[in-house]
Image 1: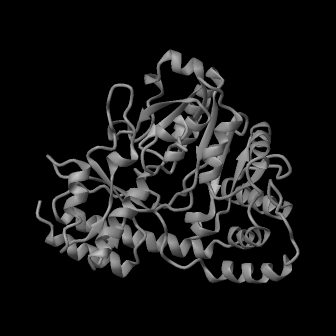
Image 2: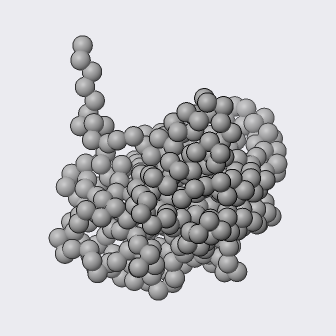
Length: 393
């Protein structure tokens, strides 16, 4: 029989980070020593206190059965407590917090609760692919808003057409921003909330990187400015080096959270309880977060100094574990990424055009940039800095 994928599946290309994995595999097959800054997957071990909490929980939860669809009460309380300590916002964990299987599944599935065929979702570009892919699978339309240096990598709300504002159901924002590393000022949050309320648009705020920053002032959450009409997505993947554990939470407007709970109840069976117990331990501890933040800071400075040393603009980020590096004049993002794959350099980065969508006027705002994820060790980052001296531009 002929196997015919759905139109939705046929319409999407490869997942950008899977393409990076293929490049790495090809180099390794030739016995090239690769230093991989391509995918944002921390290589450091999950902190011991989290692993120990999980070991204890494995026995305590030996007969746990299926986990709660919305997260066990203790985990939701821990998430609400963390939000209270971190942002000074009081939430009711009974109705304003739900657990998620990391951020990716929640971001993707979120659209199923709110988007009908023909509805518009306002999506920043470059940005996290599940914003647009989730919209596609919900049979909505993505309207891509470019994030450019001229606008400080903030969306230009005034440039969104009137018909898009009228049809939009959801708007995604992401600060600290991946991949630019930009943080958003309080005035931006106030403005985007006013914009959304004027046009009856739900604001979905992806705040996965809120604890990875390099200045003295921690980045803020949109929840500090409003919870009505707003939902924020948090993950322990980057904050606590728990990418493989698949645990996070969404918080905000009780009605929005309630719809997301209903969607997830019909799609998944929740994060295992022993992992939620480990996440409770992670949320209660800030020491490991400070240590990881300091490590990212050192790696950021090593690689940015090296890139500046070969004549590139200093693109040091304010936050996140990414460097959004401007490429040399006259080169595309793919050209520069390929140049870094020379065997005497063998540094893997992600071309910016791969993680950015064209806007309505044909602009790809990721073109001219590459993204480096600061996931190799400090020693390997120093080695990469040395190898960059071999680069011929």
